[in-house]
Structures are given as structure tokens and as C-alpha cells.
Length: 124
Image (cartoon, rainbow, N blue to C red):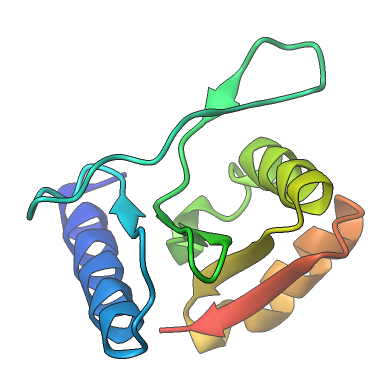
């Protein structure tokens, strides 16, 4: 991720956290954002690869995970999305993917290709 994209990503994560706090969400964790937030736990893939992924944001009440995606990183996000989708399906959590509205169709097509049906899109 380029420095500019990293800056946009971090800004989006902070904006989402602000919205979650306004909605009285509890147990918020955020990956590599600082500001006193603990990092979410790694989630291990069940595909036998030994890979694990850390969501960008998690909340315990309500219970969900959020993956914040840059339009340029959509093609490489598949393995993490599959891992998060499996995990949330098994644990009863909600899986949200934050993307620019302009990337909506591409993300929907990618989710269909990956056979992920339990992800919800949120816009930034």
C-alpha cells in the first residue's frame, strides 16, 4: 500500500471508529491505528495455508469485524475476506467491508467470485 493510500486507509478507519463511538459500540479494537486502541486478534485461515489475518476494526457490542479496503487492493483481499467470512459465519458475528461507493460493483463481483454471501458493504 502506498503512503498516500495508507494515509487514506488510516483516515477512513478513524472516521469509522468515530461513528461507532457515536453509536455507543463497545469493545472497539483497531489495527495499527494507535490512539489507545488495542489491536484485534488474528484470525486463522481454515484453508490449510497457515495464514492468519487481522481485521482493521472489531467491536464486541454489537459483534462485528470490518475490513477497510482501498480500491487498488481489492484483488489481493480475497484470502482475508474468505477467512473473515468463515469466522463470522461460525461465530455469529457480522462481517462488513468498507469501500468507496465507486468500487461497489467490483466488490460485489469479487464477493460472488469468492462465494462469500455473508459480507455487507459500507461506503466511505
